[in-house]
Length: 434
Image (cartoon, helix red, strand yellow):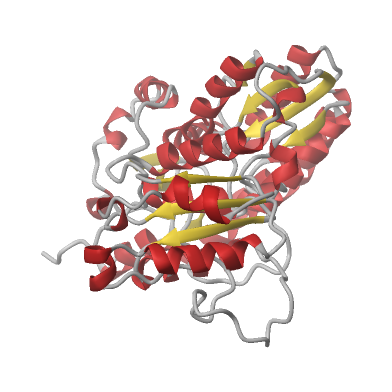
């Protein structure tokens, strides 16, 4: 039997980097060797484009031809005698860059040197909020590192201690979104549009494209809405402790599919005493459009009802997507692999749901031995399954991607995200069956 080439799951080090990179005017200073830079720089540049200056102008010695995440390029001598000189030169350069926030993140090896990063910052950077991540907790999950870094950014940007900002009625923060999500920009815009139809304004979406100044306003929101608890629940607890802001986690998880989106909007609107009717009307129109395509496809091919699917995702996404695919489209879960993101309230809910439809074994069935028609996950896992000779259609819902250039904005969340997923399902089945 062929060996299965499993995917490498990003850890808390990557989570910390992408958290800071998701702040529009922040500078991530990576204290480490060049090898720790290139993947993160490439992903940050492709997922969240920032047009900074002349793209043809030469970059500094710390950038290595890539505009994001300058690094101290530590070598053997630096590990023995300290990389202080390189770091201070890099920080002086960053301090003159007009950034709204500067963060210094240690690579795993650099954390062993013992350089005083906080002291370097205090001596070198003046007038710009800054903080350090001296040890990202490298055995932790992506979500843990992501939230710790955002917590550090919030502390660096908040006002004087003891001052509680004035609440703004009918406003929310969206927590758990970030640039290491496949269609993060479209997802954010989809939720902002739907909530605006409910009379609710989104104040901040930390780590998903906001400027540093936006994070300083987090405490003004009337409610924190946790879209993905794996990447936002710890942050919600911090904001509750700091500002007393209540938090809401949607009962059906992220707003995936028509029912999930409707439930999400009803809960948020009820918490703020607003009317969700205009947004629900958009969902009904999308349902009507989906029905026409589904009816014709089912008449011709009989599917998607009864089609087999597998997926790999964090528990909240796996729960919401499994419910929608099986209840709305009548599809059958074959194998479900959960990313290790620590405890999530949706892991036990997913098991309970699968047991209720007599598919509890899907959680223990290995992806490699479970043939399916459609697989939902990241491009690396799709490629690995194809190397094993499986015939299926892969639908990307997570990073890393296969480097497809998305010029038109897409989303997985909201009613338009449901239509996009349906489009992928129908075309995927046509590809597999013909």
